[in-house]
Image (cartoon, rainbow, N blue to C red):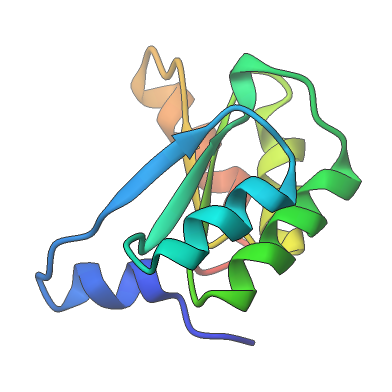
Length: 116
């Protein structure tokens, strides 16, 4: 398994630079990688359509340029999407619309099988 660049930078208190995208086109991630400026790319999955194949393709593109991927998942079905994204290679998950401590516990439980 490849290193989680985003996590390594956070652990060493170094700044990170990222952008977020709404598209699943891996060529966009490649273009961002060519700049050499970004540590990770956030895919805001709650704002547009995507399929599970796209998650794989985006992570493969990011891997070419030593970038991490983050996905922001919609409130439902957040557990399923989060686990599929991690399985595809996303290094981090941003859960949206947590409205209570119980919601947060549910999100943590959904990905507790994997250590991000």
